Amino acid sequence: MFVFGITLAALGALFGLPETRARLHVDLAQQGDIFLMLYAGVFFSTIIVGPIIDSFGNKLVLSISAALVVVGLLGFSVAGSFVSALLSSFVLGFGGGGLNTAANAQVADLYPEQRGTMLNLLGVYYGCGAVLIVVASKYLLPVGIALAAICTIAYLLLPFPRANEPVGFSFFASIRAARYPMVMVFAALLFCESGNESAIGSWTSTYTGSNSILAAYWASLMVGRVLGAKLLTFIRKERLIFASGVGSAIGTVMLVASKSLFGAAIVGLSFAAIYPTTLASAADRYQRLAGTIFGLLLAVGLLRAMAFPWIIGQTPEQFELRAGMMLPLIGAVVIIVLVFVISRQKGER
Image (tube, rainbow, N blue to C red):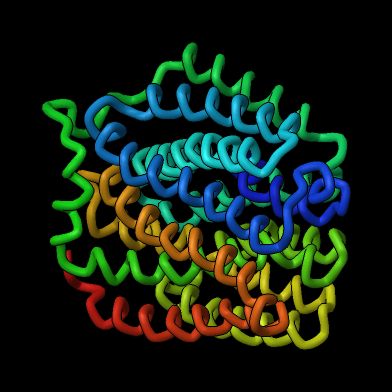
């Protein structure tokens, strides 16, 4: 998850540096296209690896995914054109998507009685990787490459639990899982949250002109995951998600209106618990096929993660960038509605 944090934050941080856009010869619209390819890679990987995890286990997915992150980071670090940046972004996202799905599915399987707490703590490492790459983006791409390579070797050597469903494999398993009760409501919630996180992570540096504000967002996201893990010992998962949705709406307004570090911190704190706590709630309901369900949920969520950065990149053509940055506010309002629906169906399995 640390490597996955580097994967998703690296491009947002690098495009905050004028020399990156100059090296690649891209405008804001093309920058949006590159973000789109990153999340397209995450999406396609996520929808594919879920059934692979349930049929063959996490070892295969984690090993190949970490190797693809190495290839993607290497490619982007030497890319000199828009086309090469697009290709490297897709490969980077494809590897990152596998790491994200497999890591979350494995932890949910290992800690059935503490899913919410452990998935929030797992997300802390995602935030650590993102903060690291944002703060020192000029210097730490080689570190990210080396770390992903070490992970590849480690996954090949480590023993892993057996697959949950070793009897067969089908690429259509994720599609069939969409018919389970309430699955698509969970998916819609992650649809909004993934879009919010990708929009803020991709464009905050460009919008505010400050990598420090972006770093504050990622740092507060990390702190929020720790707080979320603690709060889940006192309150229900649905209540935490609801409160987080309200906070993210308030924080987004503050960030867009004032371009302030404080607004970014509120957004990060509020976003932090939504993603892992929603996954934990879904795993509580659908334990047998955690990899497939997680793959479906994350893939649907990533549709918006793919769309939001691209849409924001197009807004300067007709409106100010400020208008595009309001999209996460809409997502936060929808999250509040959806968690109310989920809480009404808490007894369903």
